[in-house]
Length: 359
Image (tube, rainbow, N blue to C red; front, side, top):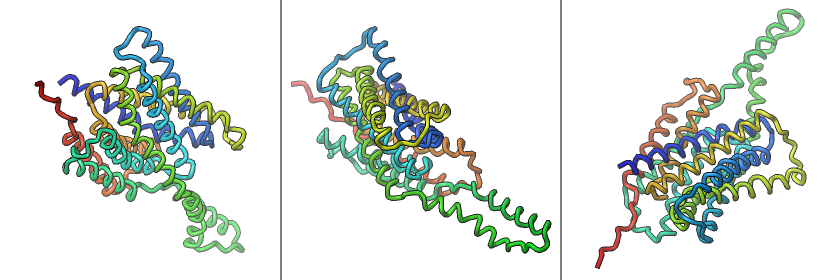
């Protein structure tokens, strides 16, 4: 019973951290006007939390041991995590918004996770109808959240201000004919239209696909690495941090000048990005703890990916100060469907193969 409660607590930790990850990272990217710099901050946070701290704790001893197979699988898991983070940053850089980018990533990742786990374990026969129905609910809810996402209201005030300025000018100078209200409003709405067109939708979808497939593969690969290290908690985390440091720090550092990065090391943006990296690393630790408490990728990852978009959306709405009038009932229904799908996956998830009877 306590082991099951521990698994639920670890899943909740991961879902919360990864749910807040997207909005926090979005703030860092906006402040630094760069894709590479926030990515490097994420890698640095992973290096501190997932390499330095575990190395200190490992000196006190822990079960399990270093194995070549375990290191390889754990490094692959870290690589998948880093590529997923890069996909999210690119999606935001191409004009995507966290309020729908993250639900799409978290909606498709459970499918990748389930199919890859079934392929690796040769256990497609365990994918029963209720479990598959739960996955469909998660995906349906995520798509509903995308379609009925709250729309920004930031351009209403500039339009009103333009109308007021036009009216004031006409009052001061009778020779100046005030423009019709409808015309002024139409002109004021043009910047909003241009901004929407600036979103490179195809690139956003491609970046989302990279994050979706990378994070979908993360759980099964990490579970294989942890199992190969005798159930160790710290050793796989160290490998993840090492992979992040290579892919998210050293490689971008060498690409800043060749790619002509025009961003800046803004203090606020750096702190936001470091915070996002810290959340990502703590989420990785939560995943490892859930596996250590008996969880399996079939069950742990779909529940994480089911709850994370709900947390992501609520966090985005809170940080953006979105008015409640902008929230559609269908949007809330999509969040509820995601939660129901996650619970269904947890209840009807495959339990693994039964142990063979002793002869």
